[in-house]
Length: 232
Picture (cartoon, one colour):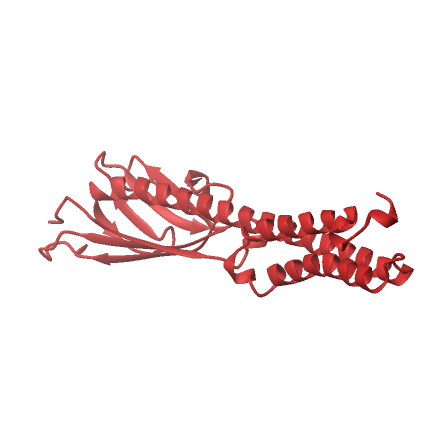
């Protein structure tokens, strides 16, 4: 397009592209977390609008063309916007990764709790924390079972003989490698022989992910299981 055909800054191809970019940025930032509304979202949108605004302002002042300074300002704003957009995209990806990591960790922890609950529900002779484990009982197959927290993971061990000697090699990890268990608390009620109560076992977990971006994020999970066998 020749200079004499330019009747408005809207005829400038560079302005049209900058306006399209602003629309794209507004659409892109709509997907950002609400917590970023007055942070990176606001910065990106203001920078996007500034590019087309500076081009329009320069065109109105000088129909003969733009000065080097005006072009450099517009280009600088564009580079800043691209830098912010790249940073925002990386942050958004990390946020999504964090959410997925936490969901996977919580799903695995819930599966472990369900596995423990099935075995506890038909168990008896429950005892709490001792030198070997956080929870010990006898399951429906008359096998002694131990559960413990070790190295941020829940482990299980079992022995056919009640008097069997328990070793470290008997324990097997039952939580996934991407799960970090910070706390494993057991509360027993009605586990004393002859107390007339059905044993209730409350299990509390503080669960997180091993991902380095999620080190300080923990989810608390708690469940209570009522044993079907009455201690006598």
